[in-house]
Length: 291
Image 1 (tube, rainbow, N blue to C red):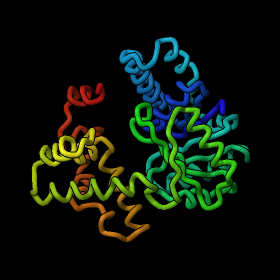
Image 2: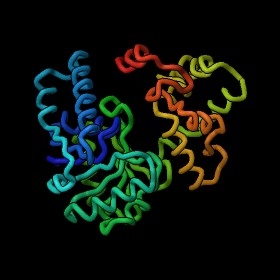
Image 3: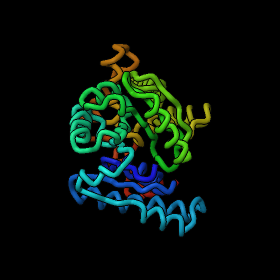
Image 4: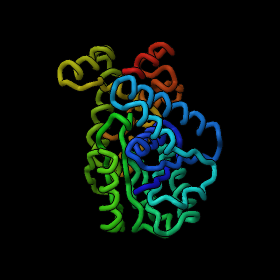
C-alpha cells in the first residue's frame, strides 16, 4: 500500500499516522475541523523528535516521514487511499456513523478498517454496502513503540482483504495476530478482568495503589502496574470496554467496577485529565511522556 487514510487525529490516530509515514507510506489524516489536526501535527513532531534524540530514527528519515503526512478536513481526499483506518472515540454509535459516511463517500475498492479495541467488527461492517471489505486493525498505545496489531475479520470479510491487511502490518514492521470477531478480541479479553480485579482490590482497601502496582511490576515483571496502566489508557476508555464486554458475555469479571464508574463521572480519567488513581502535575506528565 502506498496511501493510507486515518480518520481521527487523537492519540491513536496520530500514532498510526506516524508509523505509517515512517514506513514510507503516505498518511492522510482526517478531522472535520482544523484544531485537532494542528494538535496531531504537534504531537507527531514531538514523537519523531524523541525518536531522533534516542537514536531510533535519523533526522533525515524523520523529515521524510513528516513530509508524507497530509492533514485534511475534506473527507473526499481519502478517495485515493487503498485503506482507511477509523480511529475515533470508542463509541459504537459514533463509529457506525463514520463507517456509513466512509462507505458513501469512498470508492468500493477501499478497505475500511477500525482501530476499535472492543466493538465487534461485524456490527460496524453491516452499516456499509461492503462488509467483505471491512475488518478490525487494532493498534496499541503508544503506537510507535508497541509491536502488536490485532487483525479481526468480520463475518463476511474476504480472504483477500485479510491477506492485504496482514501484508500492510508487515509493511509497518508490526507483529500481527488474528482474533475471532468477539467483543474485546484477544488482548482486552485477557486485560480487562485483570484491571478490574486491581480496582476491586484497591476499592476494598486490600493495599495501597503503590503496593498493588509494585506487586505486578516487581513481582511479575510487568512494565507498568494495573492502576497506573488504567490511568495511561484512560478510565473512560476502560469503562466503555467493560460495557461492551459485559453486554457480549454477561460475565461479572467484565463488569465495570463501581469505583471506576464514579471516577469517570467525576472526571478523574487518568493522565489526560491530570488525575486518576494517581495525580499528574504538568511536570510529572512530561516526565512520564519522556520515558
